[in-house]
Image 1 (cartoon, rainbow, N blue to C red):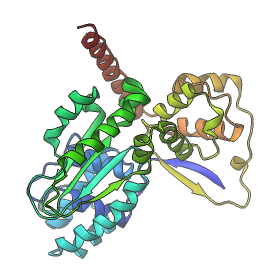
Image 2 (image 1 turned 30 degrees about the horizontal axis):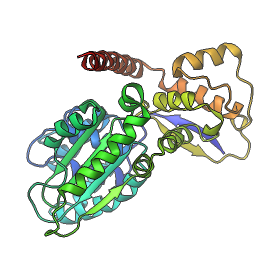
Image 3 (image 1 turned 45 degrees about the vertical axis):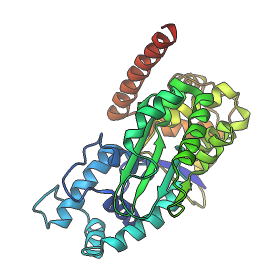
Image 4 (image 1 turned 60 degrees about the vertical axis):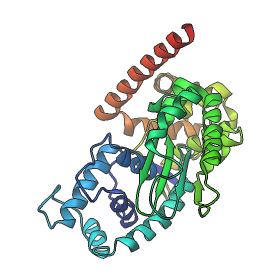
Length: 327
């Protein structure tokens, strides 16, 4: 088996179904910073810009080109026509797909499916209280809520948890949210269905190291995270968590020179270390090759700008935290 990495892979019908269910139907509120856009991006491992663009394509297919963005794909049109005047079926099918996607989410995520209408167990207005109680900035998580058959959810913004708050505070944050949900639950109402990602469960059980290992082995299938020190594992996982939108594609090949481990030059290894801020020399040659190829894919203008913006915001948050501790 060999691994390749790609951006901009075509969307599947399942992805279009999840996106169409999440897309606002009452107005065109779907910029990259919209919380519905961000949660779908994290769920599908797409960039917020790609999801925002897909919402525009869906609107165009829905209105036969009168509104939204043109040039929608055949798969997009098929999904919209399949559920035209059948929004209940769309919601049911999307929930089924979301259950599987939530389970495998790299970012710790919890999602609540409730019956009826009104305010659910989680609401975007809860963000300030959760932030003040846990010490985790609101930039480090997204709370989303959609009415009808209620979907409430929270998904963490992993790079901020890694670079600013650290594993201990990440675990404390997850446990606090669990307690918050237990207090808010109304015994007079039907028990909601709660979906937790494997990474969420690991963090709640005090095993943030499993969250880090899941991220590393997702992007570097040949890597053995246990060979890294705790500090280097955290740093490497933090860097890899920034790679939203990079798809890992495993390809079966009869003979592939890429499948054969080979030595990484000292110069190249130093370059990799500077990119990841981690010492990866303990990893196998095959894993270092995968990291090498991954960096070639992400070393693009948009990623470099995104990386720079993230680090700038991280430094600001760190300064603010030091000021708060001083005061």
